[in-house]
Length: 225
Image: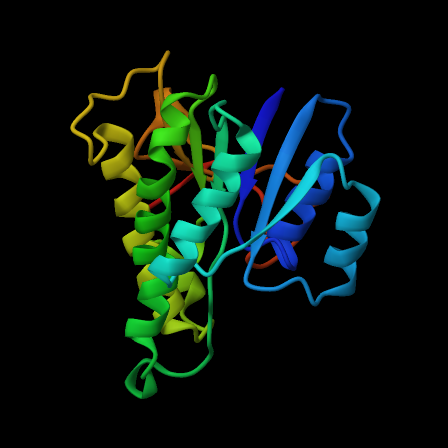
């Protein structure tokens, strides 16, 4: 049985990823983590898939919460390893850069939280079969594309996603445990980065985006830094 751990599952991308996994025909278990499960859609997901989806309370910005989450996951795995970690949890706020006063707070969730949580589950992932980490990033963190994205006024989010991109590459090249990562043993991904593309970003193809103007336009090209 393949095991997945998805952070930030109460809404948005995390919720949809968890729904897609839960509705698949694969033999899997999904640890769906979030700070709370107040969203009715998330509650419905948990109700419909009690055998496949396990709710794990988690605030990645809190070390105590991380420890409790890892304890819950470890207990449920019952000696088995974790196969796939999807770091999706993140926060974002609007406003001009000169008025930004939440940078430290956003860093704690979007960058430091990803690092701390990934590091905390590495012992479980070493025992897993697939050993994959996916960090959900965005072109808003691309320095090269800011001439397009300048009108999107989420400065702390952009800064932290740029930092997350570098964190991902560093994990992909060498883990904090000083192992050299090999293709057959371990993969750290950002969006759709695999071993052959570590350090590079590619667009995720969503049917219907080919002719859409704006941020969601798909052209099949590599996303620049």
